[in-house]
Image (tube, rainbow, N blue to C red):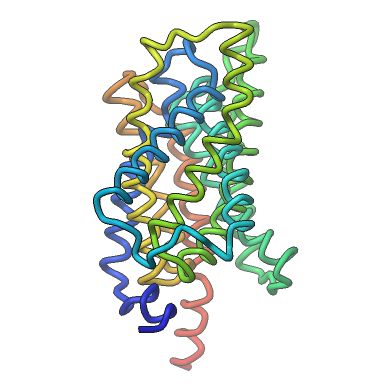
Length: 309
């Protein structure tokens, strides 16, 4: 069996959509780790614990099931290393943002990654940017602005903390958009064990140095921190769902499904922290989702309309 047929199973859009939805649900508590830690652990430590837990999980998987190709060597190790850097940066920024903003607001701003991915494709891959891409970008930008404004405290109250959370969410969206390009390439070239194993191992090693520095200079309450290792296996399950989804459907088809993250984040924030989105934030989130819809389906509607004339 060729590598292409092995890692590109029969396409199934309904199954792929269901897998992405499962991935969104699994990743919601991971991205909200900053809120769960209640400021008692730095984002850097949480990111390290998440990837260390993931590396330990993949080590256990290899011990039990073995290696699908009989080797840990990967000709794509440089891409894995780049993805690990992007993943740690994106996760760290989103975790920090969720500790500063309501979970749903951080998630909504993070959804601008869809338009960022299109812009990166145009700049790096020389893909054509169409009018619908600009329309989608405008909707996402306006939606993100409304979400940001809804988080600003009333006049006279200190609100400087809002802006570092907003900037962190935007930077995290950029890193995640870049990482998505890496996942798409790697998912169709290598097994899930290698794709997941390398990124978690590289990321855990990368984050060890700053964590050791924090432990020496500021100290870490390990009795409180160690339970966050559970983020690792939770994220591994979510990543597995995403990898299998990308193997069964095009990225453009699955892109709008990721916008369900704002709904999952809203439910998580309400259930665990009693956060109720303001009308302005809710409308902004809908605009961002509309941008994702236009981004993905706008061209299809135009083609169908032209075919019917």
